Length: 321
Picture (cartoon, rainbow, N blue to C red):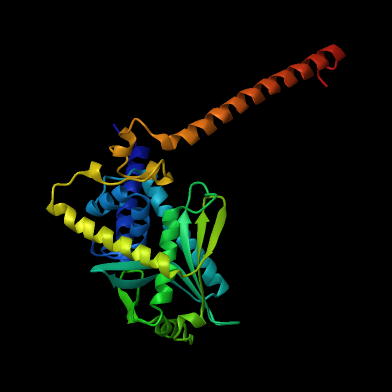
């Protein structure tokens, strides 16, 4: 029989899963009806993962450990929001930018947008990422996401593409230009031309004990066009797949071992791990072999020096000192 501690953990898991689902719907809406920037980042990293994620929005039941990891990002966002409130910095959370591109609706949801008019009109996008270990360099999927965000903000600045919902998922404002949004939220006058505004995006990676910032990222028309085309491609493929015989093994996968592979919901039967000849692993194997050899040499040197010191102490009669 389960003890009361196990029942408590099950209760927490169930409540966390329910809360996570509700918060996702409230902040991001029905993700089956559009392509998000995180979808595009995933598609650029591993098309198989991105397609399966969209075809199976109701994934298998998450463990408590997995749910805690996924929700940690939302808790970090709440903490960062309290910092901006304390400092009195004008900001908005989960601002939505929407665009139709090649028959696909593509949306970007910006974790934070910070606004300043002194000494000149300035906009900063801040994307929050929760990490178990802070990366040395930002993952390409994250970079694609933030490039898409800052690119859309710049390109659609004077278009009625900006929407905002409250904490309950109800529309606060919809179909506004960014200048109109800033006027309604903070009574701030911003230029009608994005080229007159200093616009940058940054990524803040947070672990349980440390933080690291990546950026700045500026609008790039070429990267934005590539992201939008990939988003439309993902939309088209996921709409066509149910109409034909579907073979997940035929979908292209990430090259090599990507950090996302470990956390992918579809890694258990991924075709890439059934390939016997994997030349992309050769550099990793060579590094590992070299490091193990160095480790063995270091351990041997440590043993020799320890024995030398022990013998010295025994010969000098300095036991106990």
